[in-house]
Image (cartoon, rainbow over all chains, first blue to last red; front, top):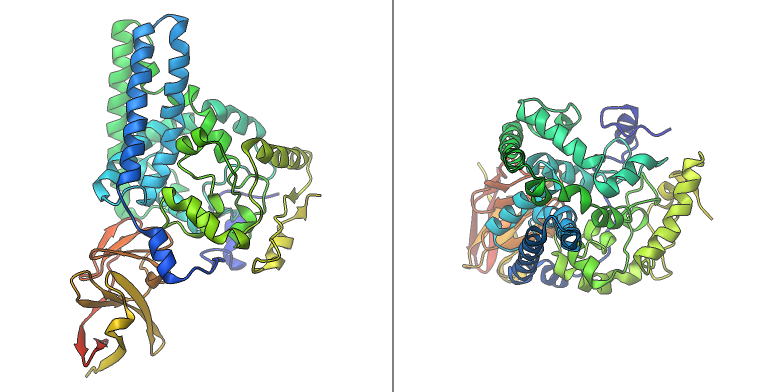
Length: 356
Length: 104
């Protein structure tokens, strides 16, 4: 039985086995090419941010205008996905600081997105750094979404944000009171902890004002704009996010074996900001989202074959998760192409029983 | 007493780029800034021991390739989380087309 706690026995085992802060596999790319791929610019992210925020204003405006008619529902559904799902990828890319070249633009979008997705921007910056250091290492990675066996009820409820958003709001209240979760203390330096509290208190004020307005007007409309879309629009980021590492090997130090690249439709790629190229992102987190398709073309001969669609991803993942739920300790073994360099196969084999 | 150590030719580093230089069991990063000057820092990020020479130089900032933490490579100042601890810097000079560094 795996213990996913960051302060439990698997955390100690990972350190003892040399899986913590290990030397991960990277495909070879000449320095000049890598520099070109890493280069930052503001243009693509400014364009995408104007489209995103413009669409949010439009859809919310139409929703408010048509409220309380059911004709407003399609506009709320569209607004909800942009609020409750596109905020996940904006939080992610701007947290890495790669979306824009200009620092304040990254920070501004990062803080707005963090509020919408209900992830404290200070806490989650550190959490995500650990996720990149120890990707899907049990006991080390605080962002393992699909555990083994999967917590099925929690995963399903998250399509409506019921577990993770609720946890985010609870954590906000805890942090606003000046306290911190003991697991968070394992990856947030002491010098950063007051920032966690300050942000949580600002958020409490915003939510209190929104709830106050709803009570004063006798309508949930203010909460349809702020807060509730994190629930009714969460499904897209959960749908795409579970594919990142779901049912693949854990405790390996090769992103080709524990991450999944999935070809997706352009709308999902806009909402997800190209994080469907997930092996590429983990191997080279310096590359901005808008250059990931180029990076994919450059290194795909060294990677497992990409999954051809979201549907294909679920078709390969769900049967394995179902078998894990029945108690089998197995995973999807990624086959590297003949052109790929092999790396630490013994870890792959130790990750459990490969599914047929 | 410390001596100047020959590190590399000036044309081995493109402008706005960085290379790794190993000496006496330690690793350093040597930078060529956009205004033509050369700088030297410790080669490993202060957050987790990652070689900065694989990172990205933008103006006077080096960004770590693993977690995107940033330092001003002229002063070593940590500029962006997850880096919190400043980077050690070392004097440089150019002699006869060679970059030299002074490390204690």
